[in-house]
Length: 193
Image 1 (cartoon, rainbow, N blue to C red):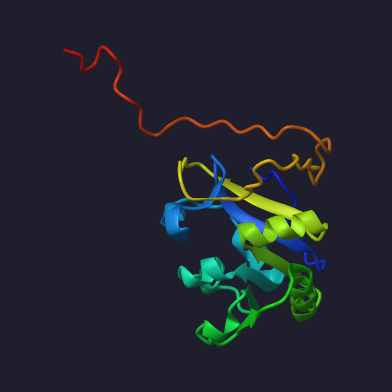
Image 2: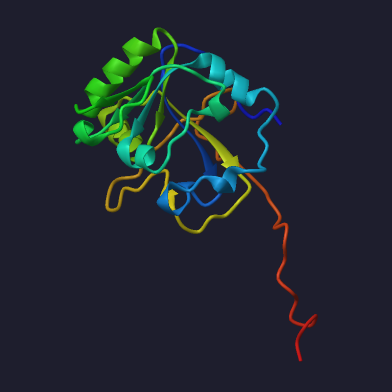
């Protein structure tokens, strides 16, 4: 099912994640093993490989073992926003930035050279959303419930953020998903004594 139009490179700032159905983009301690074995629609990864000009991430994700996106199929500049760049391990193709998020976006978009800047950090994405610097939120909802981990959007006490759907659907329509559990609990009569 193609529920969105193919991604294009237009110098956009994309907050981009695969997310569990219950809103987590990583498990506890940034664990990403839950994504293994969850296929995406054909050609989806290649869309992002060709449209991504640069990536902006956060230090906690980096320190937890961040790897190049798209299984290493993408190469380009990676920027890690941190308050302590001096204690980061130098890595080829990675620049550690100590600046405000808006400046990090400016730097990332310049490096993206017309491609999109992908934001791979829930915390930075939330800050950029508050600053009005996110052009699109691209989510791929995986059929899994994690129950714990790092949420896409945590904003306790904050106001709800209303979004507009991109594409040919009505702009504020609810997106419907329907899943069945692959394992079911035993019924009350099947194992009761």
